[in-house]
Image (cartoon, rainbow, N blue to C red; front, side, top):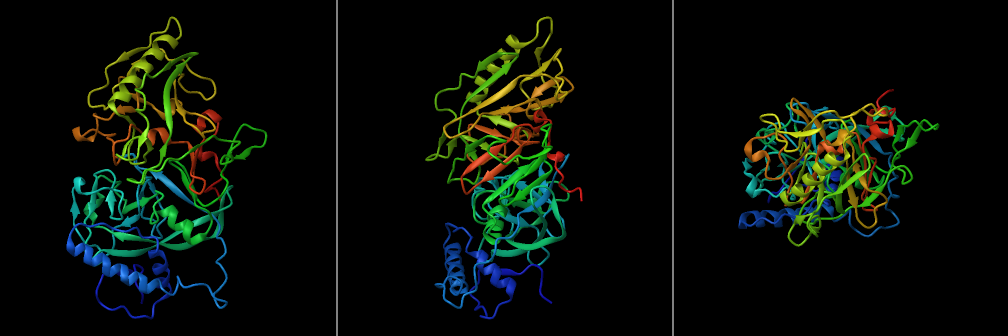
Length: 474
C-alpha cells in the first residue's frame, strides 16, 4: 500500500523509470523548486545530482507539444479554507491539511513544511544567524530557526483538502482533495507555535508557497485573499460580505469597493512590501503629520533595508526608532490638540511587563456607529499608483490594558530579545512592520498577476466584518 507521504530523495541511487501518478505529479511540482546555494562541497555535489535527477524526471513533461498530447487542463474552481487565531501565541493558523492539523500562516514563508511520521523527519535545527527565511528550508518565523539541509534533504507531498467557493459561500459536496509539495521538519522546530500546529504554510510569492502551488496546479489565477482571523480564499474569486447598502452583500474585492496599492518586490526576502510615503495622525479635525526623515520609509533593494512590510508572524506593528519617535510625537500632538474640551486624556506609563510605549487614560468619547471608543486615526499615505490611503482605526492599533489604552505599534528596539511578547519577527531591516493587529478584520486581496494589494481597512467601520460572510454556514 502506497504511503501518503511519497518522497523525492537527493540520491545517487538510480530511480526506476516507471512511476505512480502521484510521483509524476510531484515531478511536475518539482519544477517550482528554487535553487539552493550551499557553501560546502558536499551540499554542492548533492544539489548537482538532484538537479540532474529532476531534469531526467521532467524531460518528458517539458518536451515540445505534439498532436498526441492531451488538451490543456481546465481551470479548477477557487478554494476557501478556515483560519483561526491562537489565543496564547496570537499566531494565525490554517486547517487545510487533510488530517486538519493546523499550519501557521506566514505571509513571508517560502514553502509548506510540517512534521512527518518516522522515518521521514530528518535533520536538526540551526540558530537564527544561519537562517535567512528566504530559502527553501523549513523555517520558524518566530524563533528564526530552520531545519538544517543536506544531501538527504527531502521533498514530500502533503495531502490537503478544502471547499470550492463561488465567492458567496463554500460549495458542497464534496471537499476538493489535492496535494502540495513541501518538506519535513523535526518537532523541535515547532517551538513557540500554537500547541496543535504541525508546521507552516508559507504565503509568499515564491514558487513553493501554498498560494503559488495552488495557482500553478489549478490554473485559477495567481491571487489569494486573507480576512484574518476567519478565512482565506485561493484563486480569482469575488468575496461577498454584508453591508448596510440596500444590496445586502457586495463583492469586496472589486476596485470600486476597496482601494488598491502596488506591491513592491524585495528579492532578498519573500515578504509583501507597500509604498508608504508619509504617516499622519488625526483626531476631531486636527491633523499632525509625523516628521519622518526624508527617504526613511523607502525600500532600499540593494541593501535589503527600509520599506513597509506586512507580517502575520508579528503580533503588533513595529517602527524603526527614527520613524517611531516621529510617529509618537505626532500622536501625542494629535491627542493634545484634538481632545474635546473639558475632557482629561493624558499619557500614562504602560503597565509593568507590557511592551507598549504609548499609553493613554482619560475620557475618550464613544462613537455611535460602530459603537467603539473615539480615538485618533492613523493615516498611512501611499505612493504613486495607489487608489487610496490606508487608515488604521481604533481596533487595528489600540490595545486595552490595566493602565489604559495603549498603541499596538512598538519601536523595534523593544522586541523579543527581552523576552517580551509582540517582538518583531521579520527578515531584513524594514522601516515599518504592519503586524497581525493592523491586519485583522481587514480583507486583504493579493493579486500577484497585477502585483497589487487590495485592502478594505477595518471592516467594523463599514458595519461589516470577516464573519459577516455566508462562508461556513451551510
